[in-house]
Image (cartoon, rainbow, N blue to C red; front, side, top):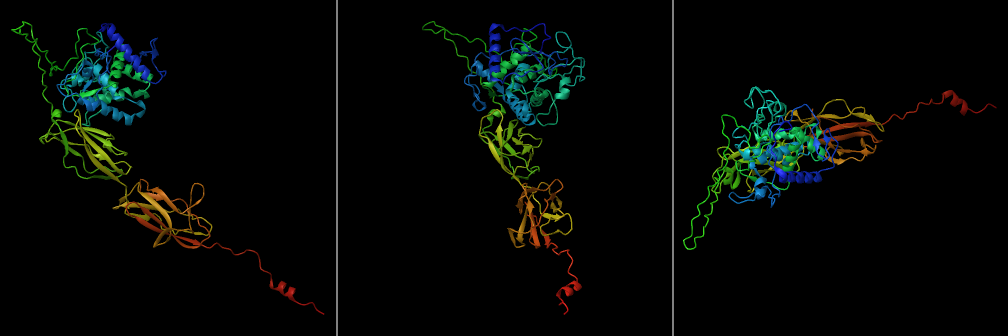
Length: 580
């Protein structure tokens, strides 16, 4: 991919015009350029900064085919995929992305939107890079798990027309123990995959040959260095870091702009495969592993016979029959059914004890295996699937059932929806309702036995602290309320006696929005007393029914005077009559 190549396929004036138009359109749609680490040419295009670090691909070769001059017309959405066998224009065909490949790009976008929201990664950028790197895994030649049916390998990076990168993985990924080769649908070299690899499908393995793993890795790679891909500078820097070539940049930008105007899902294995390569005018493709064969290209129908009509002698061409593709398992699914999912409830912060099970069926009710089901969390909730994602894709098993990963409740209580849909198939989804209930406690006790007393007009020396438990275990983050009540049998807020103070120093006798800490402890603010004396009650309650009533005693202040009384002798002297 590369500035290293002496040979480069030239597409002619039309190709140049397409690239220029696409780049110009894209630049117009981006925010103003921001100064970055790349120098700028007179054309406004960023140039490589001369970094000695290798790109994601080691600047391996790439597909140079550009999108059609016309954008997809109409621009079909995912729900408007052309039916199998329906003739489509060139633009529409090029806009088709194999279902599993498309699902991987969108899943990666969702994960990056959560983990690196400042990056603003669009899935269309992953699609553009996937098109240029491998032709969308050679038109979607992947199995139900998203792994390529044969390895996609770039040439050996031996310095002969390419970068020189000696073996870094002992041939683990590329089978070459002498030099590295770019691997998989996103064409990572082993030395980059060693740190950039990700597990995108949750199988516990980071495999560059798996589109879910590779797409997620590509997303994280593009989002490193705090680049903002919604800006022109950030987008260009990220693309050039993937392959350090201005021609590569322009090609990717062309496909990005094209895909932004409209795409649709097509069955795996039926996508269009580019022909032109940056390293060879003959249109060679990446090599495959010795153990696997390159997917065959559909044969071109032979020239039809043209019999002569007896009456006129005018040749009448025989129509070429439209081939009927073999339906994939996904094509046969007409409905989704619940497969015995129990009631979905969990306490805030805890994992749901039950999982969602969905069955893919034909119109006759027959189970369909090897179909990818996407589960999406919908609604105002911070609940996720275990691992922190809002979207999960799972293949149906031999019984046609896909079991979603376990749900993890957040702190937001209430109901939310999980929707199951078929990847690559437009049929009605199946909704499941899940509920998150508040954390609870069944017992409250004071952490101290010290009596709580103070004099009228004063303040209590000790603050009230309690501990909450549920079934004997610490009850953390449990909501609580504290109220100074009138009597044990009257929970009405008292209008006299002890009180709390708010932030402005005003009297408050009810506190809401309280919660226990990680150790189940709750320490109330300081209490003060007005001029009323006697015994008063403080009641603390939590969600779950735990209640504790605490006694507060206010005594009268000492009002005795410290001035001396008149002496008896003085009194007597004052009251006696004078002598005659």
